[in-house]
Amino acid sequence: MKLKKLVTAVTAIAATAVLALTGCSASPGGGSGETIKIGTVPALYWAAWSDTAEAMAEAGSDVNVEMVPFKSSADVFVALRSGEIDMASMGMNVMAAGLAENPELPVSMVAGLSPGRSQLLVAKDSGIDSWDDLEGANLGVIRGSTDELIFNIALAKNDIDMETDTQVTTLQASADLLLAFRNGDIDTAVTYQPYTAQAVSQGIADAPEDMNAELTEWASVPTDIFATDEIIEENPEAVQAVVDAFVEKTNTFEDKDVWVETALKYQSGEEDLLLEAIENDVPWYRMEQSTHAEMAAAMAEYGTVSEDVSDVLLEKMNYDFLSEATGQSPEELGKEE
Image 1 (tube, rainbow, N blue to C red):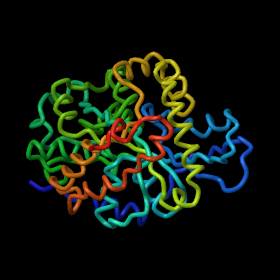
Image 2: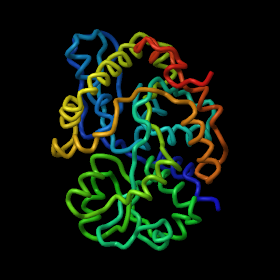
Image 3: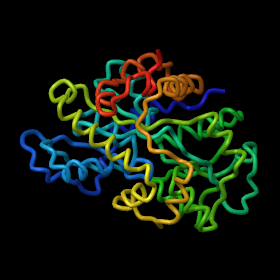
Image 4: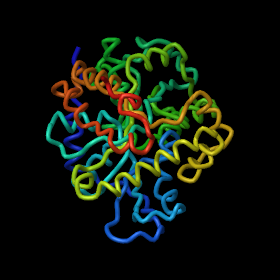
């Protein structure tokens, strides 16, 4: 069964979305010349990227960096494609949808950020303990998000169409789902940490273990760092400086306390709860071609894009900057030989 095509949703977002800025953070590093604008969606797993501008400032970088926060990858894509920002974090599914519309999209992937760690939540005492139970359920969904794609694929694996077989409550940001669960507005949602841990600790939702094991197997959508081809061509030194700082910051997250302390600079949360949320996670900057290709193919299989763009997506994976920053070969970083 084919799903509704998210590519049309991405097109609509690109035409109508308003940048969800909550303020801009400029690096006071004393750099001169053009400012590099970096987009980010504050999240626990993406904290190293959110902190890159500040890390560069503290290191006295010659590159001026302005950090621009957004609410979702879909908003990031609009700004990146239009040239309003130069580099950004976003889910690879949004990039794949963009490539389905325009294979010549002038944007390239320059580093990984997260391998994909979303989980399914179900309302406390909802009685939902299998995928079949989601037929007719009220789903909390952020349209155009990575989590919507993950949810769509999981439902399709069980012959459920999100648009025709369920009810959908549209949320604006992941933080909204906590209130939605508390008010009884939704039965289920797919989201990432720390919202999963917060919902469970507050007693408003459960994270069913068996269903989440299947969810991870079916749909793990990586988040990556992207840069416009224009900034890569015109100022590769600045791109390298940003990737260097990001990798250096990511490496400090081997200490989980540093990871959480950094995340709490950009989001609210309880320190102990966040530490528990990342207990089994590792810092990430790899770009695994196999995972990206598999997910791009799955998007085509389940109708979320009009065609399989996996080959084009792999061509957009530029390992030069990450390889220089880490001292590792592209193959060590996830490129297929």
